Image (cartoon, rainbow, N blue to C red):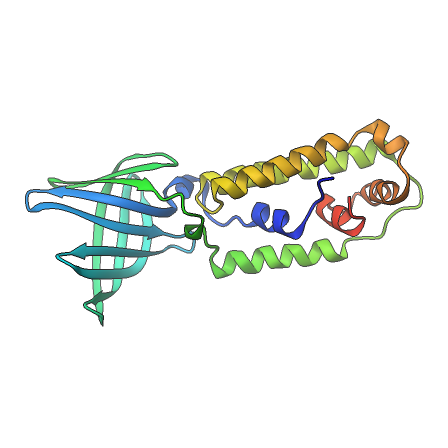
Length: 237
């Protein structure tokens, strides 16, 4: 039996970026082509608007960190620190790159005669939540532990509507997080599958014939002030 767990909730509610920039967020493996030769580097653009660029040139790793933003079809990166050969120094410089194309898996940039082609890394370790997003997700989880009281009178029409509406919202947010690079494909498919199976269990007939913990779940969902995540956790649905 599939149940609503804290892991599923955390994966779904952890959103944090503007939709216009969702597809550019993530960890990218890039190849830069110029008249001076070809170079590869790893670029991480996170939802907190900070970036990290690691380039290996002739056996030496150079790391740049700073902030990023988009202005129209331009990616603007403001470098604040640079590490070369293990030595860190303050380094303030702005870089602007034209976004030629951008999908959920590919990113192409251009500056003068320099072309950069990037592919999104599928490694789940790249899908890290920023501190503000973690705080928001944690706060949401706390609300699912409290919620409002169950009602004594069962209202199956209201309970089924509230439950399905809540699950549909979680599925929608989960898809946005996946497309925005804040949720790995593996985690997205897992949570989508679990929520879909739970949604199929929520029916008027199931509610009308419910007993035990299922009945308690539907009574909980009969209260408009409760969220399906709270009722699911509270009554082990």
